[in-house]
Length: 164
Image 1 (cartoon, rainbow, N blue to C red):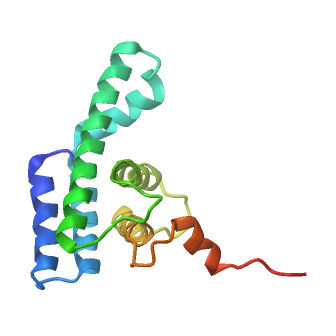
Image 2 (cartoon, rainbow, N blue to C red):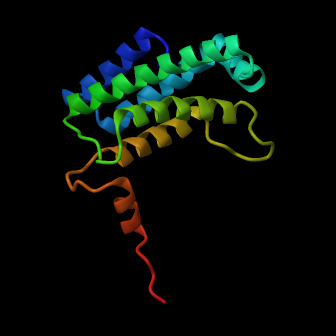
């Protein structure tokens, strides 16, 4: 989330979940679509990707990229904290908002990067569909449903050890 209006828009989506006007799944999808659209329209985002790939060794460029990244991470971290609080959710014991705040922009930037030049002859989902999936998975992975288990404990229950 690079701009205050994006943060406000995402906050409004969470408020609509809290008020019962919207389901959380729909709010996450709407936020994902808005984030992808914002990244598509952000000319500086493409420059940032080029600079990161080619000029990160330059101290001045690296410093500017770090400041941009921290602003994005801080915005997503605070959005995650506010959203969980407003929705009455708590984090799993092994997840914190700083981790979630790093994962969300990495997901958005990653899907934009990977979908810029899709492989020929291969049907790939669009960036909003990919970000929607990842964001929902992150919410599910991060939120403690009340069992107090870590993400690893929960994941290990999906595929228990097979005795041979």
